[in-house]
Image (cartoon, rainbow, N blue to C red; front, side, top):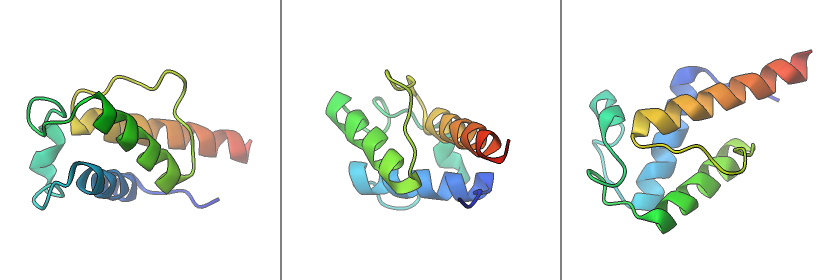
Length: 93
């Protein structure tokens, strides 16, 4: 299992967001991390469920059930990075 850097996790999560929400660049800009899924990107609950599944599939891991509540793009990036880091630390122990 390859450990991803925080920048790689961010890029992969942003790619998933772009695909599911059909958001075109500048979604990859750092300024995008503060965008809110519902208010700024127009996501609904189905979009969020699809996004969580896409991130899980892309990064080969599972969010806990129920998945975390992520209001902003940064919330999702940070939570994904944290869970992947924990998974990798357990795998190395």
